Length: 341
Image (cartoon, rainbow, N blue to C red; front, top):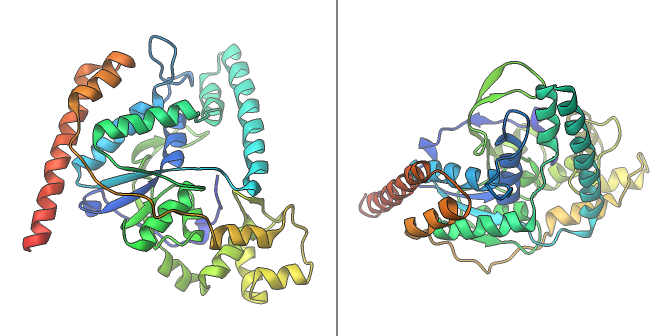
């Protein structure tokens, strides 16, 4: 879920055309979870091959990445490593939540309520290690780089952006801002017409750009104070203080100046040490051991992997390959224009 501070964070729409020629570091696990949520059949069942293996994640990665490359965007996927100890409680809660959602999904199917079934099915998706390895293999065949983070992928993606190796990091979660990404791009996996959860109408979802500097200026906070605010609201590493939303948290940080002052005064009870959570955001483990290189796609390997192994439509896969090739040539053209421009 990430830190829920969207209502106080300024953002602006951005088109894929405006991202052309830019390197975007994508939070891979965040993207995969989104694909498992939205790429489903009418009854909520995931896409599967003839052997009963889930293919929704591969479909999302292949076609969405092909679309990005066709527009000249240069994606690099960043994968999670070992989660920090503070995240174990959150992960346990999520597992229980998925198990309960799966039970509700089955009950809704028994009642014949497909709308409810799909709603609960979207909450039951789980990214497995096998899915992660399959995704990395497909990216290799597509010529798209990926980075293995030692810990949180979102922190590593933010690090790439801070170093200038990426123009921005991409995730649905605002935690990227707490990790210090200069620019956050949202909705890259969700772009298009989407049905609102629990409602009978659709909205057009477009990419959003969030600049850290603009956020800090508009809220009149430092980067460290933004982390403090996020911890009060709740993050992937801690439950927020009950009854405190983003606006109230902003008031508290402005009044007291820091999370340390709030802790000293014992104003609230925290489930875990909030200052330890703060250290996770400000001193997160990242690596410099990566190399970003966009290679030629391998059509034969892609077809062998998707069509022969996982029963994808060869015609649709070929269409995706054509986009990859087009994107590759477009990227080279952008590089030449910048060199001689």
